Structures are given as C-alpha cells and as structure tokens.
Image 1 (cartoon, protein in one colour):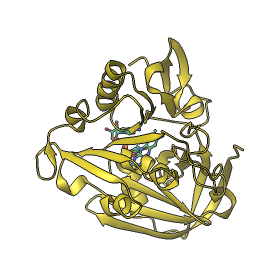
Image 2 (image 1 turned 135 degrees about the horizontal axis):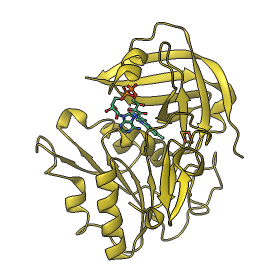
Image 3 (image 1 turned 30 degrees about the vertical axis):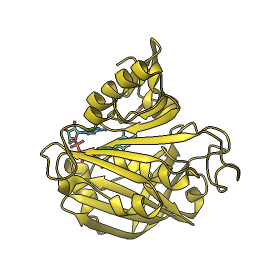
Image 4 (image 1 turned 180 degrees about the vertical axis):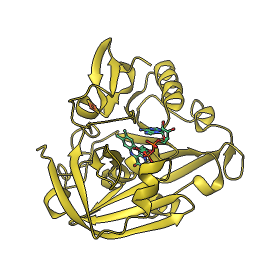
Length: 261
Ligand SMILES: Cc1cc2nc3c(=O)[nH]c(=O)nc-3n(C[C@H](O)[C@H](O)[C@H](O)COP(=O)(O)OP(=O)(O)OC[C@H]3O[C@@H](n4cnc5c(N)ncnc54)[C@H](O)[C@@H]3O)c2cc1C
Ligand code: FES
C-alpha cells in the first residue's frame, strides 16, 4: 500500500563515508514500513528553498538511510547539518515493478520466481537507489557498476556481503574495466535477464539500445531534477510512449522500452 508522510524525524547519524559522499540515517518509524525499493524522499534542507530528492538507500527496522554526494548548495548544507531532526516527505515514486514472488517476505511473499535472473546496472550515485533493491530481492544476481574513478565506487562490500556478483568499470581505469560499464554489457547479458538500472541519462540510453538488440526487459530509474516531488509543478516531465509523464509521480521507475530518450 502506498502511503506518504511529511514529518520531522530524528537524525541518527550523518557521516562522510568517503570524500564528498555521506550516509544519512534517520529514525523514521512512521515511514520505514512503507518504503519500497526505488522510491525516494524529498528532504528539507535549512536555508534551501526547494526540497531535494534522495533515493532510499536502506531500511532497517524503523531506520531509513540515504547515500548522497555533495553536488551543490543543498547537499553541501545537508552534509553540515547541525539540527537533531530533519523534515522528510515520502516515500515517493512507484518503486521497481518486481515480478511476483521475487522480493523478500517483508515486501511480498516467500517463494522465488523460477528463471528470474536480475541484473543491476548502476552509474555514479545511482548505486544508492539499487542497493535497497539488491538487499530485498531473494534471487541474487550480478551488479554492473560504473564510476569515474576507484574512489567513486561505493558500498561494494555491502553488495558482496549479500551475495551479489560484482563487475565494475572506471572511466580512468583505476579499478575494473577501463571505460563505461555499458561497453562490457553486450557480451555479458542474456535474453532471460531482467535489468534494473539507475544512473546518468546517456548510460540509460545506451542500456535501452542494448536491451532492444538483445530483446531483454528492464526497468530504469530516472533522476530528473525535481521541484515539488509530488506531481504538482510539472518540472520533471519526461516522454513515456509519446506521452508526458511526471518522473516524481508516475515514476521514477519506468520500463526501459517505454522511455522516449
Ligand atoms: C528521484 C531522485 C533520486 C535521487 N537520489 C539520489 C541519491 O540517492 N543520492 C544522490 O547523491 N543524489 C540523488 N539524486 C540527485 C540529487 O537530488 C541532487 O544531486 C541534488 O538535488 C542536488 O542538490 P544541490 O542543492 O546539492 O545541488 P544544486 O545546487 O541544485 O545543483 C548542483 C548541480 O547538480 C545538478 N543536479 C541537480 N539535481 C540533479 C539531479 N536530479 N540529477 C543530476 N544532477 C542534478 C545540477 O544541474 C547542478 O549542476 C536523486 C535525484 C532524483 C530526482
Ligand atoms: S517535481 Fe513537480 S511534478 Fe515532478
């Protein structure tokens, strides 16, 4: 059941996990039980007019975590926040449309779906959105993860610990394959795979092309710039099957083949 809350929650921690990347943990008892992989919250930041969208990175009991990168004024202030509480609106968005019986018991049911072969593809901070998904899927698969450099590859241990096979690439070649992660997908993906992707638009565009060529189904999380986060301002419009849709309300997850890039 979709339910969203606009509430002030207690900050448990807000720590730098590596240069420019922070993990924010919030005690959010009202919202935690309603969080679904791929959803996000709009975070109020003091001194910043519009709330900022950040994906759910993890949920443990009544604690919701976020992984964010300092990219501008809002995320910089967030990283230095001194208050004990923070106002969050969410969970928002549709979340990943998981096949029946593939998610762990806290989400759906207990049985695995035979033949379900999940492949997660993440670029940059897109890793935050797919981490919660990886933790909730009962079937473990392969994570393809691309970043600029070794220092931008986050939470590899977390994926390893929960049993995901990891293949990485870096643009500067400091770890894994050198170049874009999409360069090595064509030889590795197979037609029965289900793709879950989150990352920059050029990466998603390339994934669409590969998925079409190989006849693979998949889902992508679009991280458009957002203002209201709830479908009121039309600031996050995208073309889906020729129609205008709001990323915040109708997405942020869409079937890859439906997105008109
Ligand atoms: C649904 C959704 C989920 C997101 N999840 C995460 C997450 O889990 N972790 C994370 O680090 N970031 C995430 N983002 C991106 C995050 O919202 C932006 O980085 C943040 O709003 C920037 O705010 P700012 O005030 O620091 O930067 P601003 O001063 O507003 O902008 C600084 C720079 O960042 C760019 N920017 C702003 N918003 C976005 C965006 N949505 N995508 C790409 N570039 C942007 C601007 O164009 C500008 O160049 C998500 C975005 C969306 C829409
Ligand atoms: S951000 Fe306002 S409609 Fe999506």
